[in-house]
Picture 1 (cartoon, rainbow, N blue to C red):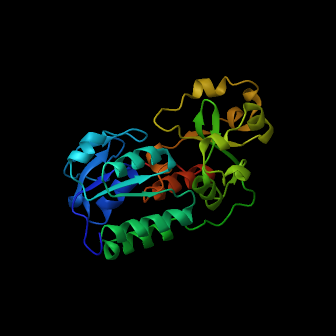
Picture 2: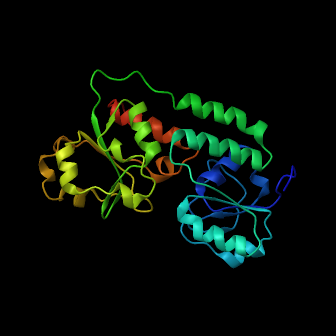
Picture 3: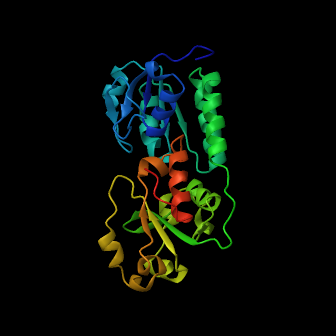
Length: 259
């Protein structure tokens, strides 16, 4: 691509579409994932993918200059698009530092580095740690429920920045969700005082959570400290982590919920 801006971009991940909208590259976008919810009113673009699946023929027919993806989950999609002659850019960030780097790199790739700088500054400033409480509450964050999966690296970091203690922080360096699985017995032993759930693509069913074996005595269940954060604000490693972090702060510090 050299120094030429890509003029026809497909976004297979919601955080990349959100980022391009913020850094004034939306006019270059010709297709997006169905999971993207615009941060404000924008001209609609064709929805050509989910997350683990995509309409490959449609993407190829769009004659895009660049296809943007995220995560090893999209590796097979990226490989097939490359075989079909597409230029593909995929990041696989797992930490906050990697997220900042990925957003900065993506802005460079689409020729919007200058436009991205104030947004990156806002994100870095907004994700600063708060003054820690006298005692950090023990937090269990559940990324999936069947079987239970503890949180990915950047969420564990945000819990600590918000003043909490991630009870499964020792697992946050494991990239794959299958490597972060926990048993209900392990969760009971950890005795979290707060449970936060964000099930990717599914609403949290608190009734079934409360009915798990041995859970009635858990401090978070006993004290009704059970919270849900929309997956679009916490499971997508992009600018919207700022909103997810604000909600985490409100939960950990027992502040009124963020609208």
